[in-house]
Length: 398
Image (tube, rainbow, N blue to C red; front, side, top):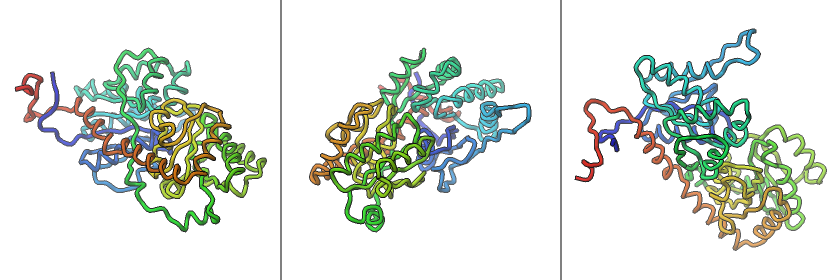
């Protein structure tokens, strides 16, 4: 049985992801950057440069997937273009493996690419990381389900970002392989800067408490609940609310803000690549989602020493510990969430304690603790050069 390569060279890894602000794209990009810092060659394959890929690194390569448009196609065949680009990158850069984030359509495209290069005698393993809505929402659609199930099962390894998502996947799909849990992570040092006092004074000139929310403003995030919680909180103490992100529900949310007379106290700041400066001046992070497979936004808040008030949906209880790093409540329970917010923000000692607890919890999920788990996973599929030594169980025990 192969345990490892004694002479483990740096790997050549292809990462496929959505290049947007969503959790899967952020995690994939930060993972690639961390792997590159450790000497691995990382090739991002996607339709535009990922938003978090904002630094130069000699070990990072970006390959744009170009989808030609023809009058014949009402919908350009992105999956075919993606698979073809994967094949080109595999062959031209001698990749060791593909790591695809978000099953649709990346897993099926990776399967197609692996079969194409197999015809020329190459075996290219691919790992699929499940992130959430690819399983809990989109993947359950009967239009996609057979292909999603097939491509996940054909993956050489499958990971999920939380235990909850792992169990949801087994419930929703006939998966015959083991799904390993490797948690999402955060680069805690990104949030180690000192808060900018001048920035806080602009937001809260009279010393008001600052609440913050970040999401894609979609229905599943239940952002109107954030506004209602803030409205109740403001009745009890001076407060301001910062809304990070954008999405289809934003107009309706802005209308609710006006209806509740909160226009002067709620600020919509749009999408932000670098949210750490905002989080560092915040006192409480609100996450009212109907479902979160993990809750990366909450973890980033904790890294900035911000307690989290969230629902108990999905994987959130795995990171937000009730009464320690913040509070949990049932989905839609605006009344209890409002009580928790008022109680916490009214007690400076409790707030200080929870801020420290939140930071300590974030350290458990620091990038330096999680990335080695991915490296260990990759090493199971590393190719052996002729001068490398294979270690067996028996040899290891001698």
